[in-house]
Length: 150
Image (cartoon, rainbow, N blue to C red; front, side, top):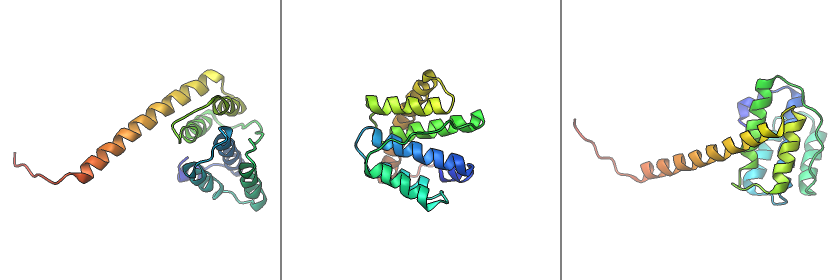
């Protein structure tokens, strides 16, 4: 999730999203540094130290948080779901536990499994395009300028 998007959410949605991120990153039982970085960013917007400590503890013991229903407008819910899909595919892999937890998250937001599947498929495509973009950037950075007069 982008910092601007998170900071504009109501506190209840910030906490809910941080817990959902914690659940996603522990669902496959492997927590990467990239995932921890995303978690750090998400909890940095929370106001309650006890909530932050609780989320961190769940990650330490690899416990997937139980989430309450998140009632928000559909545009915000969709943006949160898309952001969570990007988090889920941070390591480019999804196992059955991650898919199950992502479906659980989508359900808590009022979405059907088909929406979760659609968003995950989009996220895979997004990641592939982002990888290609990074390759182009690297190629461009490694190139030597050649100025052509037309």
